[in-house]
Image (tube, rainbow, N blue to C red; front, side):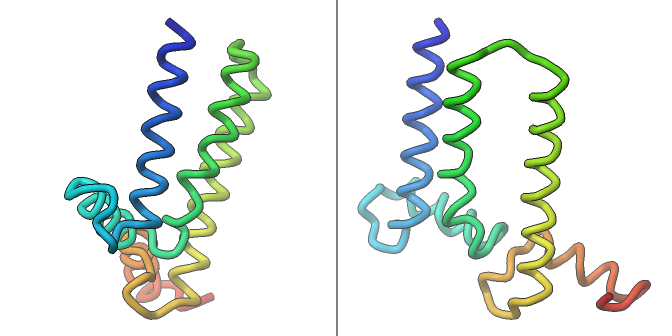
Length: 116
């Protein structure tokens, strides 16, 4: 069962990654185009790399599937790094690839704390 779920999740991540990169050319079908536009709208330029980066923890969890405090800390750290990368992108970029998630967050906070 572990091998089957690993293969399914690996296939989905690879499909979503290539759908994001090749989304405008319709090589991945209509769902790939829809997913790519959604991904670019909400994650901006980071959408090109974050799905492929999810392959690393998937492989590491496949090799050693025990759950420890250290793995939980690394998971939280990775999530915070992704969110901070989205915030930096929203601060520096001002076009359609700004990312809606962090862009709205920055726009909301800029009224109260400025751009610091």
